[in-house]
Image (cartoon, rainbow, N blue to C red; front, side, top):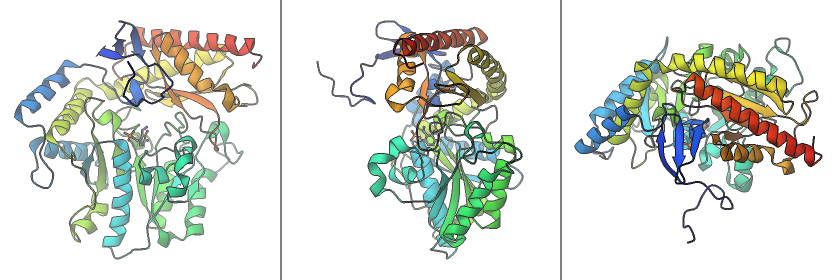
Length: 450
Ligand code: PMP
């Protein structure tokens, strides 16, 4: 019978997932898949964890939903306190606005940044600078801030044309320089863009601490974010860290921005915050940003029906509790070091791999047609799709990503298993991944493409 479900790719026949356990997912035929990407870098504590199921059941027995303009709730209050405890640093206290997806979290960040300036009497600061290799979400505001060409191109006439700058990418430096002699041209370009537009028109700069879907894990060089924050502060521009993919332990720190000791003005969270157990995301707003709003209209001009519902808040609290109790942030670092090391070994044997990079358990693998020249494959080869499908046939799930070549070409995947993954499971992941690459290499050879 014809399916009435609109799926990600309507030409594809997807396996039907029936149950999950730890790092594995099983389909209706009983086939097992190693979840090498936590779905879309989301299921960070693995599947069907009993402690989370218990909390879900207990909360559902009490109350699942109340509306934000009628009630607060204990789980929502506790979650906001917990996030503040985790995020607050030297300077900042953070206040949480809960939403349901990463796109809503960045969209809300955009609105709060603009509202912040309005409440201070400044109605001109309403543009956001972002980077070309970036993905901040699928809704129109979030997409306006995103450089992901594939996801933007159909809607470009409807999007705001916000200014963009180059992304830091030492593998393919947009300025053809080498670090550190480059003196961080990529960070300094922010200052050029601000001056070109006029700082009086810029509300904020937004960046993923480590680029995810639009760059397959681009880790900036040391000093980059320190310089970016310096520039933002000098021109009175808010710094939004989109930690939707990197946040809540994924990179071996609770927030990736801790790697560089920089405190953002606004933080967007999603994905790992509820580890896939419920739709839940948040916009964390520093005291400095929220204060003019509290002292002004006293209401953030945004919100969704499900914002701060007690069911999702209880689940997110339980997930964060689980991460802390099981020392999973440390595990992300330890496991990540091992997995990156093993994948770099694979790269030495497999010339299709251009680079393996990452932090913690957020790892990118970029593919090239020529290892020495770093030339990407032509789009028509559709290498990323081939890799992802072949890996899935073998029982390994990996996440397709753009390679971070500005202009949108290139092939790459993200490997980001649950933080709970064990050594033998990582070994299995690497074996399946290498087998996949070998077979693809053979196919490309037969077609005369390598
Ligand atoms: N920001 C980043 C950095 C992301 O990786 C994503 C999702 N890939 C989003 C925002 C959007 O999140 P969602 O898909 O939950 O709307």
